[in-house]
Length: 224
Image (cartoon, rainbow, N blue to C red; front, side, top):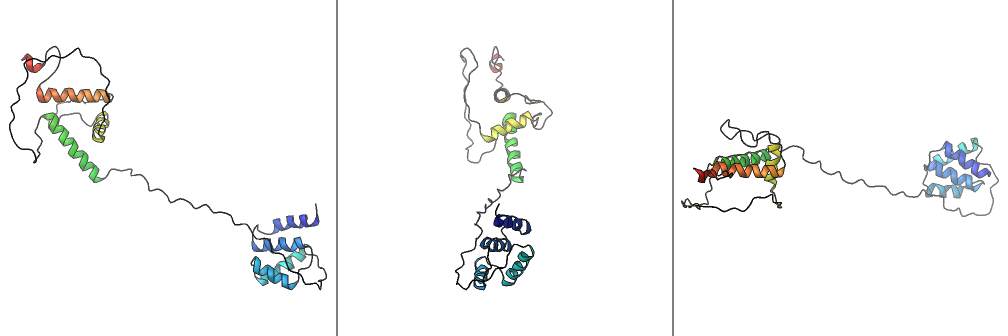
């Protein structure tokens, strides 16, 4: 290992890496000669480093025996450009994403309350008010006979509204137990079925309570 390599290792231990004193010391040691005044001024401009700091650095290098004194040459010398630290790219952190809303707002509860009240009114058979609809009695004559083909399980795709999915989730959590305004237990009491069970249960209860239609051997409304 050359003398210069040994000197550079000492500099790496004595000075903070990439500091101005570190860069100036490496440059001085690599020259392996006495640095003239004009070259010292160039070092101060290129690194840059204060002249007083550079003067103290020469003193410290002499104490470490890293700067061997030599006679100054009379030949003018154009100093090479001192080593400059390479610019490292800094990673710019991305702006933090806003946290997801973890709590329901007051408006969410009001919307849910209105939806539950509307569903309860439909199930209980109470008419829902709609100012746009004209109050006109329409006489509906039910058919005397209804012919239904042999029933079977049918797989059908149904697109659910978010509100319908919400009713399903709330039913599984036991929200809908009693009918509104009474202690009568509804079909969704302790409900733990799947989405198909939920849909069929709601349809059965709707037609039973609103049309007295309970399909079995005979429909109740026609058996009476």
